[in-house]
Length: 159
Image (cartoon, rainbow, N blue to C red; front, side, top):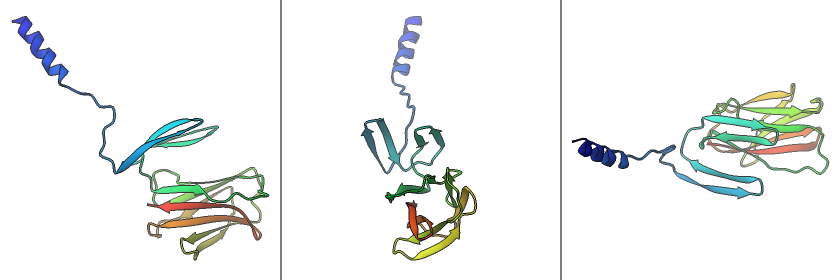
């Protein structure tokens, strides 16, 4: 009788599969580079962000914003300028951070995909919140300038 129970238990356990992650996604793939590789999918909700000295990675796959550096200025100021969706996930605010440079004389403007200016503001602190709450899903450009000189431009895709 014990032999029958052992065989039955073996069949039951051998038919069970364990999945670490399982999701129905819209798209995905693998990206490889000299520093490593990453697998990604589209169609899930964001759940964690990790930041280190060499960069930031957001675990999860569907975030409210996609942010890209657009310009490379020939004579950039010595500041480290970054734009992020923080806290993430968010669908309302972006955070513009400026480290290592005096913020005096820096301005920020946002443009829609057709080039129409949507908002403009003087940067008053090293961390500036940009309200995206009332804007529809689209592609936008956030441009940081000092006087008439462009310092950095970000492309923002609001999903």
